Image (cartoon, rainbow over all chains, first blue to last red; front, side, top):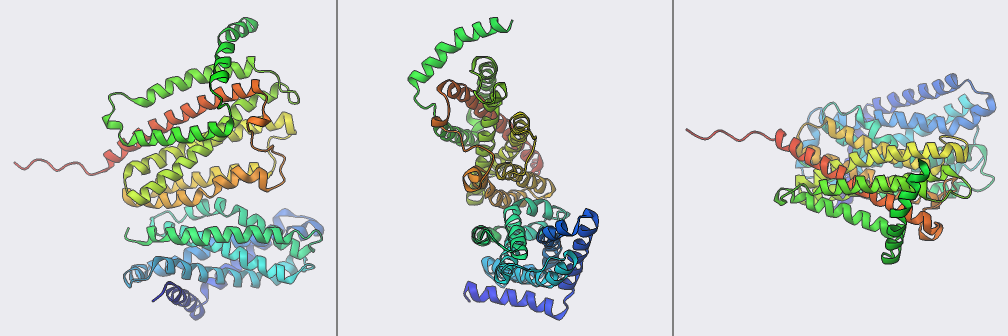
Length: 226
Length: 275
């Protein structure tokens, strides 16, 4: 079976588990929502400042929620040693990476989409700019968090007592993507008068290209034995 | 006292600087860069066979580095001309820039070590990666602190969220993450393999940091090259760069030995002879 078919099978498996008991999506959705509210409370900013913060707050919520989501995506694998089963089947490690990263991207994207109307309401920041750009930033940003996240979450899931390290490893790494996604989202919300969005999209595309290829190659070195 | 020191340094320093400038046309930062990287690789290669050497080669490098550092500091603080715009504050350039180069080269060495480990599975390469990561972090902390001291008189602030500054700080943090990961994995083989993977992924930040002044609009100046520096300053920078490179190699080699000993200590003791 080719890598693509295997990837689809792995992604389908992960999404099916989520579909049957959507505890992960609902859990991290409310986690991120709580975070958005906290940002709005603690900064105590004026309405205009709050509106400017909407994109950044949304992605801060997504970033923190993503660590929980990524952790959980391996909790289901390690509980009954299901990961060993996948390795022994044998599933190509690249297919495992692509499948899991795609499932993680989908879940993050769904959470981001569900958060959007809530963020709009909390921060009073309707989308004045391009909705297409907004959706593109959500999708590319989710993919940019998911790719290195899928690799690092496996690492921290396999090393005992290392799950606390996932944010330490992941956050500095995704800074470029996070800046691009939050600036881009803000631009889409406020209206992009200077046409800056394409350059942020380009940065996100580059980030995704590097991580989706490099991390897929390295994934096998962690998943095999150990 | 200062003037006497100046006279003394001028007596020794000027002919030496003239000699080097006359005979070595490579007072060119990019070449120094390449040589620095090559030296670190050489140090790594030597490190693999360190047991066959009759003496600790890195001690020689270290002594040379310290001497060159003392001389370079004297040059930078006393002999070098004042910077035309920044005055004496400009002198910090002579330590800030070398620290940045050595930090990047050390992280580069960590990348090479990790890649080598994944290909060859030799623990020596993992030790190189571990040592270089630590030394790179030390030099990048130095870089950030010196940059902050530099920034206050020239930009008016210690820190600003400029792309170059942000990228440098982020580069340091990614490698700190790798060290933290190393600390929690018990099994030696897993530790080597997994931290190699983490190091390679973290290395994506090295070119981003280096190119950040070109890719984004930034307050930070472009990379310094032969053409952007006055010849007098170039010579001083050249001395200090070599001092930092040699000190970096010395640190990495020493740290490598510690890592090798720890690894030997970790592995199970030999079984006793059968009676």
